[in-house]
Image 1 (cartoon, each protein chain N blue to C red):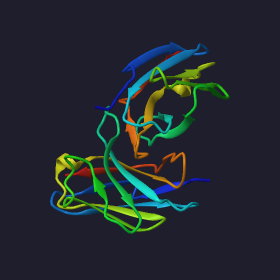
Image 2 (cartoon, rainbow over the protein chains, first blue to last red):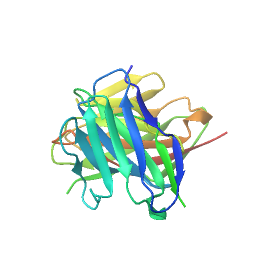
Image 3 (tube, rainbow over the protein chains, first blue to last red):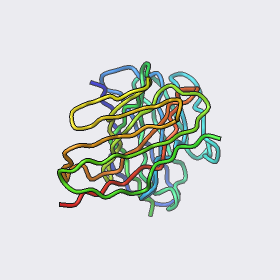
Image 4 (cartoon, rainbow over the protein chains, first blue to last red):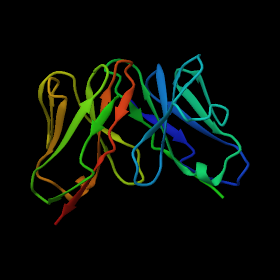
Length: 115
Length: 109
């Protein structure tokens, strides 16, 4: 159990376009979902925390207007990278948790390349 | 501030034992997690400790001392596939995970 999927697994887009990444909890209801970004050889960087039906909480330095997060249901959260630039190229990972001890179950990640 | 420290890199030999340490200073504590992350992949859960002591799960064990703000992950009978980064994360006062930078473990034949 506790499977989290992400789609797409990789995407290449042109600078200036927008990309949407989906994160789904397949066999449990996720009260909270997290979005991370990871650059090569660096640790996970939390971007935002989202709870179903409410606005996401963004970490300091993360532009909320650029990284739009929608947590429409207990099983789906989306991250939209708007007006993507090459510096947005990274590995984006979502995670979801349902109850204590609030273990985070990770999706497989989405590798975004902006050309 | 909140801080989690773990060694950047460690090297060990196939079949041996290795201990990866993690020290933390956080506001609030709701448990400590260890995750394994292979290059290019998402992290996978290894262990969770919220009480002092040792938790054993097959070849992997995790230890916690809350009074010392210290944990370690012990890997026995190392296999080449254990080459990965090992991430220590603490669940803080709001249950949000605070991540260490990870320890890259290199296994040599």
